Image (tube, rainbow over all chains, first blue to last red; front, side):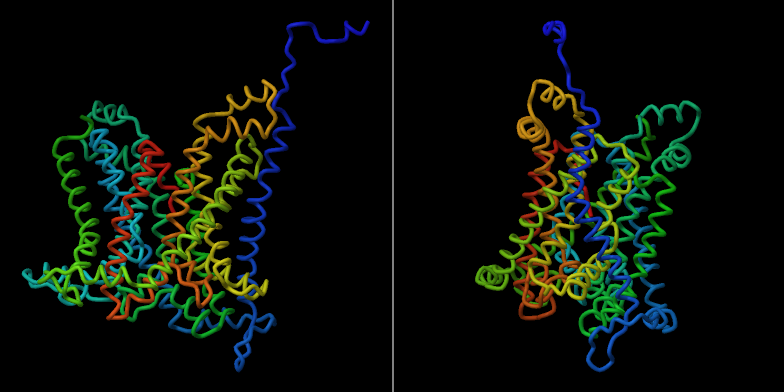
Length: 295
Length: 270
């Protein structure tokens, strides 16, 4: 009979969230993937293609002829090698300075401060992030100026302000990116259970040894995660060096000047492949430490 | 009592010193906006409100501020839609491309600003023949803002799981009703926090902006940068800078309220 084919009374037929809902949620990825996977990655690919094109010497128009001239210039002309080495060095120094400054602060925030103070410190570290980038660079410009705060502090010690140059650029960049290093390390340290510290101390380690043998290795992926920001932001910056760097140039200036004043987009594209390659190597190395899960 | 007393004191002193170094430059900017000396010599000899009056009348600064607000609002809107879709799409899936998708979302911010800037400029100008304008700035900003929304929404999904939505579906609600009545209220504060970050990121951005803006377009950072080296504009720039520093307390306050002090929700970072 018909009634015997119906499910028994009281038994609910539950639609399981099986294949269908999974398929649907993959559909949701289409718009963001078109934007990032097709448009953005496409733009990066196009940048590489452009770097292999030439330029008409007289009109400045881009000529779609394949050539390796841009890369030849990049590798053979001394000044570009100098600027590349200089940029990578500054990025590395900024990263190390930030890591050295950030670790003790993050440790204090995560493991010493009371919960209330912890909240306040998070705000205190975040607040400068919201103050405009240019304002901060500009603040350092006026502090480093002749007769500025730094020279009036340094004067009694017989020292003087470093003035505008690479040292000023390094200081300013380290200042700008410091919160990007503090926050991941803080998040990483906060996850470490207190019992770990106690176990180490019970086993006879003093604080210094606990830090070196237990905390530092476990916080390392978080430090690397922070370093991705400080390193990449430094590689990609050309504004701060214009504000406090005097006449010095970084890779970013070369890219900007070539697409603008010099109107040689193919060469600018070739120069821009350097930070891409450097960052890809950096990201690949960071991946091995498990840092990418800390982003 | 997990670290020795001496170490704790040392850490505290170190933290205080660094925080002082972080805040002194910012306070100096605010103070200098009242400094009567045009070259901002230290210490200031005389204070004045003249620069504030001058800045209040600055047409350029006001127009640039309005441009920045519009660009940031539009970029945030796009980022909200795309970031939420991405977080929802990756939610239940464990397919092999999952990490690739996450990496792709981080990429515009993990790659140096000059790279994103010149890549997009080249794509617009050389490849597509689109003139640079505020539209191209919005597209560029939205690209690197997606990550902030995505991070916040994804963290919320991980924390809350999917039981409520399953219950809603079991009770007969379709996917759209479930999204509207269950998912959306669930992620609302995460969306707000993500939007706030996206807005802040776009509002402050200069590197990518200089590559993707037309020659006539002035966002606030571009206006500041262009006036930074003009001696007679310096006092006005200083006032604008001071206003921005004081105004930065607002998003911090909001983000703090939204996230309940959860650092991860507030960073999403660059």
